[in-house]
Length: 156
Image (cartoon, rainbow, N blue to C red; front, side):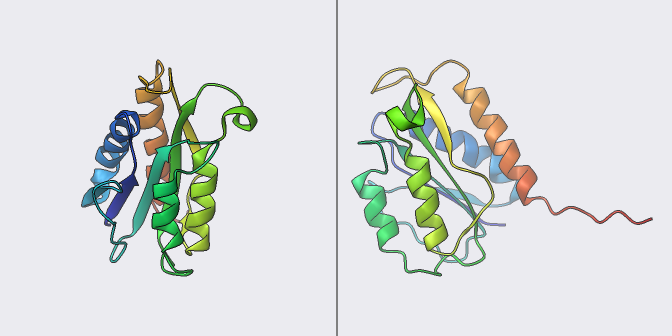
């Protein structure tokens, strides 16, 4: 199972979380990461896609919007996907959450969401990650792993 983690990270916090999740999902097979500031991701041949970025102006950054606005509808058919963001502490209606917009873009491209959008908290606009967010990332990755493992039917 090929996994791709696409991320944007201005101060390194989102990249740190993306690396943790990529490493945790690596038990399923080859996992690669693409920083959208350094290149355009290729979605060909992937089975799992995780997209993440910082919340900017209450939503998805301009660069991540651009990347996913160029993905045609149906291009990610059959791909299991999830999205997360980093944001300041507070209710989503106040801080915004890029993961919600990213999830919509993934669905528009045909991906099958395996988890709702997730937020990880940073202590300030430049970070660092809030206490326990590394553990939160491992737990979220474990939930993705559980969603990817096929269940065996129980035979009576």
